[in-house]
Length: 275
Image 1 (tube, rainbow, N blue to C red):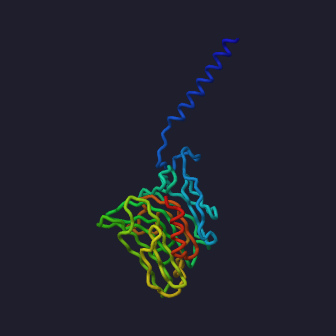
Image 2 (image 1 turned 135 degrees about the vertical axis):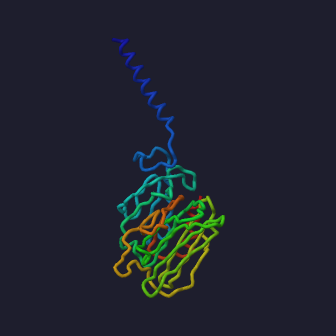
């Protein structure tokens, strides 16, 4: 009986050691897709940043190994999701777009359908020679809302566009810019529409790179005729045009505000969140 007990104890101990050793040798892919287990097997970024203008923060995704929307816990419809290292080199802490089928959507509620808007996001983009890569879109059929995307260029630089719709009779405002965006490096991008002046502003790493001439007071318009923008696309645009493609780069800490943040606010966000 004693020998049997000893044998049983040794067998259990060896089994536990074998299981533990197996766990320590598992290699985790830093760009895990939707096949990944729900529990985190590595170390996503758990840092909580100080919120700037928290009262007007309408939506926030930190992409820390999950897709939960942090402000209203909105229901998310996922086409495909992949994660990558973030700007602090932590695994599974950033959105990884493959340019093909990675994106998700949420229904556009009143907080998102705001007459003023600010988008704050960290990007790491690779130059594309042709085509597009949509970061964010809250529009339908190009007659309402706004869209932000990367555009192909023959230059050895990055090119980004933003279109802002101001309603019938008020036209729209375009941002189309090449340069100022670091290639294959993390940078902070912010887009602001101020309905009180009809002005679009764009910032890179806390500094202004574009401010449109005031076009006159007009809210950002989400309805035109029978068409109403009803979904926010992250990583894509819901339009059917063949030239529309998903974003093929990294993004992190996506914030959408229902107010027009000031230049000082944008600089503060950058200084708080920069690596």
